[in-house]
Amino acid sequence: MTEVELLLATRIADCLDRRRKALTEVSRVVASVKGSLLLSPACVMAVPMIYAHWEGFAKEVLQLYVEHLESIALPQGDTSSALLAYAWEGSFAKLRDTLTHAKKEEIVDRFFGNLENALVFEKKQREIDTKSNLMFGVVEELATALCLDIGPLRAHSKNLDALVHRRNCIAHGGRDQKLDENDVATYRDLAMALMTDLEATLLKALCNQTYRRTPKAITA
View: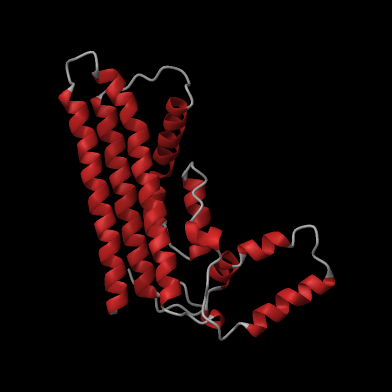
């Protein structure tokens, strides 16, 4: 890894460590009321917090990744088509329902006129839209746009969607949730597995430079 890549890896690791400590505190709070009438409500309140740390981590580290791609001044001509399309999403959105031939020429001219310029993300794409419901389908969309191989996360897809659904039921006043400390531990472990796998995914993308039009030979 280059010095810049090592800096990014360190920042991602710091994010993961901070979230791990926060999740440990959630578990401690639940454990502190075990055997009391507060246990059930504490377990219910823990679920949205656990989900929030997963979504917050994903948003934070993907933003760091995007900022890194801008910092290395990657020529747009050397940028993966999927990533370039994501970076220009805001401009494409403005053309909806008005894609005349002249507008098409404008897109073509912009492309050929910017091949040597460095990759720059538009504001919304830089901020990472998790849609406030970071289910596996949303993770897939972001991964496709950012050229990330999220294979390791697929094993958690059903459990992640179940976590989001349960969090939404709690947050929006759905039917009463019956949860205990074992459920909290299960969701905490899920969040940690998701975050750890996402960290590994980003490090692998850095190593293989999957953001380039011609990536390096893929390594395990």
